[in-house]
Length: 383
Image (tube, rainbow, N blue to C red):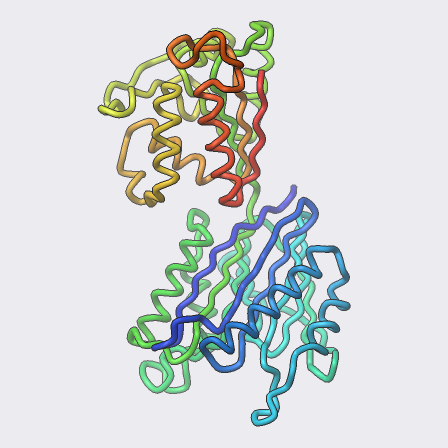
């Protein structure tokens, strides 16, 4: 089983600073996910520039497929040394996460990574080596669905210093907190939010250092298939329904005619849920085996508006209408496959215009583009 990695990132600037001196960059490819975390010396503009340069250089090299030891060598030899403090201007933590369930990581002068497996902190073994005159910790460990990997800057470890924790919160207390708060339904963003709130409270709202938190949740990929619009060739009805009903994915049907095709091909009934209708969005329906059945163009348009406006999930979860439910499902998914039938609806299209200029086609294209920009894998197929 392939492992998918979900990210949650939160940062808090040191008091009175406009920029965070820490920097985080990550990128995903089919064969690996790359993460680089850097803490610039000091705070403010100078620290931000140094950490940003470190993450961008390292992430670019790793993303281009260069070996990690070569990247470490380059970055280590490039980083200048502060003549006063005799330490590097920027620390770093580089990780490569592979879909086979393997993590490779190198850490320089940063808090050790925290791995939570079965709600217990795992003590990771590492090898020490010297690169460019710097002591590097080299890790390699497995990751399985349900595991959590957490990286933090010194600002998290030192939270509460001189107050609730005279010597700072510390790695061990942080580890206990994480082990007690992770659970299956919590998202990476959710855990990052929780941790950021605790750190801010320990600093009493006035952080003495930049705070950066990266949470990686290992899990299986969430796939959603959305079927909207009848195909031009009726012989494709069955093919589209078969694609919709493939296992291990959530299923959404948008459009009355489309829902009738699905119900007919599956030999099932459609039930209308009048409680889900609003002035803006028609009522949703139910078909056994389908996660969501909605009206077509109006619902898709409203869903696009919701995504563009950034309405939070907590607010959407309180609503029953089809557009809000659709947005929740789209946000939960990592991979979205859209099956678009191009039969013209006379109410939405002048019959003399090309099918590609149809209203629904334009909406689906905009929706796919927006979701892709949010990091989703989007595939649109036309029939």
